[in-house]
Length: 554
Picture 1 (tube, one colour):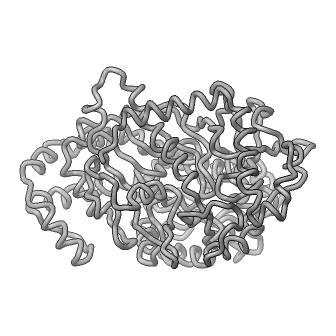
Picture 2: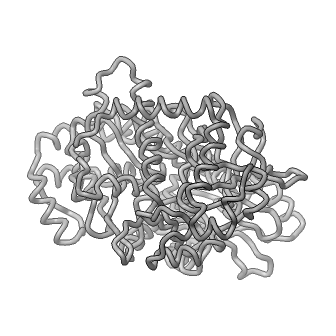
Picture 3: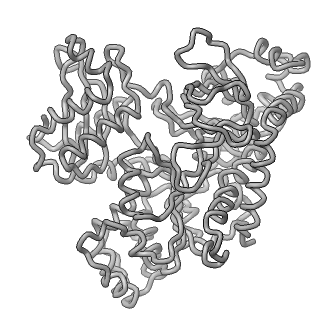
């Protein structure tokens, strides 16, 4: 059945406002409903849920946990165990795309998926509807270019599995009931049989669609990457459109499919060729799709380089930075259209606790107790069997939406590089690369970093994919200075001879694209495609070392 986006959006926003108005009560009631509902599960009996009468009891009886505390329980659930962490059985297993190198499986209940559907799918359309007050639903909710794909993967027993961002789509189509007619990409491409690289195929369908009104993606680097792909393959794509040909190696099945589904379209090719190639990148999205109204993608300070890229391509098209989420849960909803790094922690997401950062006390406090301007680490109890789970996410409270906090995601505690106690996080890396790009004019397609112990003193090893690398003079020295300015502790450690000056290696063009293809070929999920910044396994380090441009290592 076709989705009524305006009605769904209105319903979702009304519920968000009501629950945020009563945030404390919703949190309290939800926690005790979860405890009551699961008191007869194995975990509930083990920790005596039935004896918990207050939040203080809950905090005193159940220890703060991490994934290792659940791995044995989850293993048994995967192998058919029931009534273990919860009474309700999971219908989906989130495969973590985190940075630890090891995949983690997190059970997900239908209750959780329904909340995600309402808040990360529904509220988007409500916010867009309110942003464009004078436009009709027909003009606003036309065709969507969904950049992600949602292969229907399953556990051995048939239960659905995949990345968190794909669970809603798989759940909506669990009985083949999802109406994909509002998407420019056909349903069989949106839900492919296997995990594979479908970029060329998706772009061909998107370019053929004149009435596109939205681009949906997860992380901004992937959306920017698709625009880069179009930009760098412009003539090839238009030639293929004009003649109905396929001029790239995508496999015989995809070729056959495209030739059948996309016959020659010289008229649309002529329309697109009328766009001046000079300065095509500036505002290219609006030039290609004249009816587009918004872009859905997660960007902001942690993705500063790619956010700047997409702003250049969008040239005024509003961006909905829609959600703050992880495999363990969906925690926040973007406060407004076109405003990054401001997420409402919605009270129905799960039960929140917060550990103050840089405070003498390490006693977790509640949602109603956190203060604007302060940073906290989130402890989360979700609907699917994680209790007092330590995410490692550090957020800063930047405002209030009714009685719910509005937060900015800062970094994940374990996503830092530290050789001598300097602790470089994602924000500092992003600031370093942004400044390096500004100072050198470098057109950076991707970057990552790891520790290098091949020197007398350990040092940072940066890999940068950059089209115009050979025109940059003193690149290593400039990057070093950008790094010093982004992280005072790094500067201090270097000056005290605790770490050596960094090493910079440029990568072959297409290295990050090749890495994504490798993930797809090995059956790994590409739809979420988080930015790879920290090389934390030998496999990743070897891959990028092999992509280094020989003779240009600095």
